[in-house]
Image 1 (tube, rainbow, N blue to C red):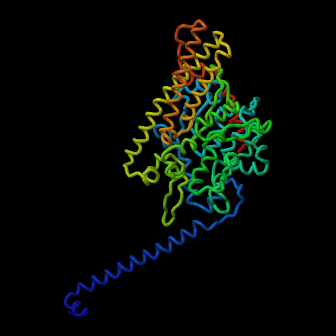
Image 2: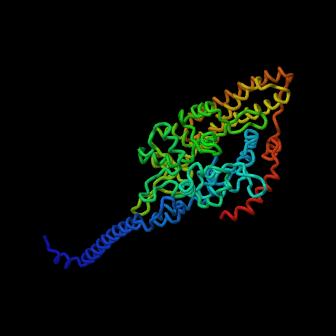
Image 3: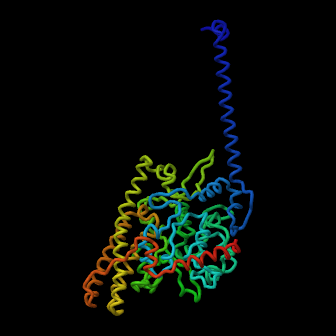
Length: 489
């Protein structure tokens, strides 16, 4: 075998090959070493706290100095450009899109204005500006209790700590408006010392305690849903717990299903409002996203809210939770495709297909309910008695509760399509049977023809039909926004 010097003498170009090969190897090793050093530096930078602060620090920017990646992704929630077929983060005037809602909520604040929420960055702005919260400062008292702030800001735990829980809930929403200035953020979900997920709202803790459960002993994966369940749930204001206080309460004592919550309300004689047309004692579902999500296939397989709405992402060596809380349909690669191997178009199409079919039936229920309210109004007009109307009003209450439970939970047709379909079907059955009873009663009262369905093909027509003076309401709210809101900031 020839020696290397002999080979180089015979083939001088081989020396250049060895030279450049050595150079490339050294270069690659240098890159690897540099990457290792950089990643170690990233790890040290990302998780070495710069600030020490109280649990009641409400400014997310202060928390963000310790966790810049999470904070930067959180700031992306300010983007409201994404709109899916039935949701997203863009603003939707829900009453304009579906004027039947005005009639279903006649006599309740939601008939005045109902816009789809734009996300956590706009929680304070949207609740301050909506006509539903009234117009303090215009000579008229605010109709909404102070409890309405409970889920809107990390200032709330601070105020509860300073004043006491019941004292915070006391009074109308304008009494503490100037003290609630920071929108939903880090302090709502995290412990300031450990950064572990943390329950900051007493209503969820109290609901678990009444069921004999210790929320401090749940797993980290369960907490990735429970921090959402502090707000994205069905709730009501218990005005009997403490006199003069609208005490925020989760009606879970009998269970979290639609039927269990309805049974709880019935047992306690609770009614949100009396319908302006039918005079039925109504229930208004809030947003039972957590309850319905727990009845779906994803939850049964251990998937948490954050897995889809705040999936993990990586930057360099760092894997962290994406705090751009949003629809999974705007982040299919990191949410759906972690588990599902179908193409994006196929996955989105599957979601829309489920939504289309369930909403088709839910719309049928809406039409039946509008008929029922109007027909009940006609029965009262013809002299029906309370005894004659008792079963009818109960049927309207129950049928609309089923509609609202599925409509208010924004992702219900995806979270739990089978349960949602069951609830809507039972609502259709109740509404149909109630209208049969109404037809018999109307005949008894001498009305043997169809009650005319109202002309409500626009929001404005529907609001006029239920007797709302929207021009006055909008003028009063505009005065509040102009004269009072600047003082709160």
